[in-house]
Image (cartoon, rainbow, N blue to C red; front, side):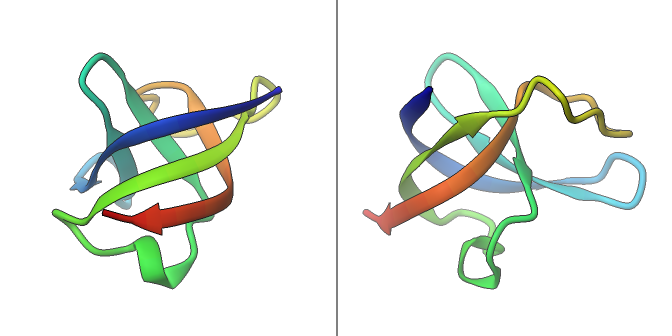
Amino acid sequence: MTITVTGTIERKGFGFGTWALVSDNKTYELHNPPSDLQKAGLKVTVQGQVRDDVMTLAMIGPVLQIESFETA
């Protein structure tokens, strides 16, 4: 199921480091984000799927695989 999330991109320093999308009520760990999204402080709206079959070292929230995005 595709979801839409609006929030801010943050770089988290867990393990080797990971990119996250922080919304008003939840933090998503981004799964292989495109380089255009790897900018801390960027405000975006992302469409993607939560991947229940992916585990990470950071474990900061649900893993979100991005299908498309828009900068705000």
